Length: 245
Image (cartoon, rainbow, N blue to C red):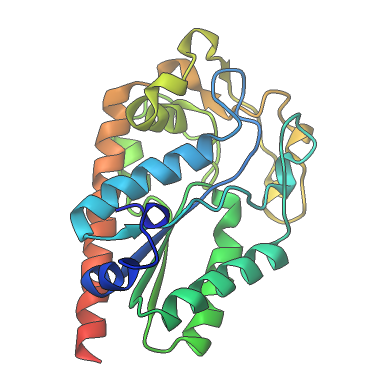
C-alpha cells in the first residue's frame, strides 16, 4: 500500500494493521547512454512495491537523492552529503516511530548510500529502541549474480549500468531501458580506488562498469527474486522480534 495516497483519517488504522514502513532510497546519477538518471529510484521503488505486497507493508514516498560523490562530475548527477542523508532518514524514522511503526525497512537502490543508511539505523537504534530498522541492498545478490553473469565482475563491490544492473531494469522497469544504446565498457579500476577518494572519471568516461549488452530480463528475475525472498525473510523475522518485546 502506498503511504502517501492514504488520508489522515484512515492512516492510523493502516499503520496499526501493517506496522511495517518501507522507504525506497535512490539517487540521481549517470548510468551510461542506455539507462535513465533515476535508475536507482526506479529500482528501489518497484522492488519496494513487490516487497510490500508480501509483507503487508506501507511504501513511503521515495527519497530520490543520494550520496553520489564518485559520479558528481558526470552530467545530470546530483549528490547530497552523508550528513544530510543521515539527518533526513533519522527524522523520517522518528516520525514513523511516534506513529506506531514497528519495522522500518529502507530499500536502497544505490550502493553509495550504504554508509549513511547504516549510520542512520544506528542513531535510530538509540532513539527508537523498540523499532527494528533494516537497511536492505539486494541481500544475497552477489552469489546469485555470479551464477548468471557472462562476464567477470569489474570490481568486488561496484556494479553500475552493467550486465547486472541493466538486467534489474529489464525486469523491474523495462520501458525505461534503451537496449539499442547499451555498450560494453569494462574499465580497469585501480586498487587505490578502494583506499582513497577516487572520482570515477579517472577510470571511466561512460559510467558503465561492464558489458551492458549482455543484460537480459531473465538474469534480472533470477537475482531480484532471490534478493526479494531474503528481504521478506528479514522483515518477517524483525516483525516476530518486535512482537516478543
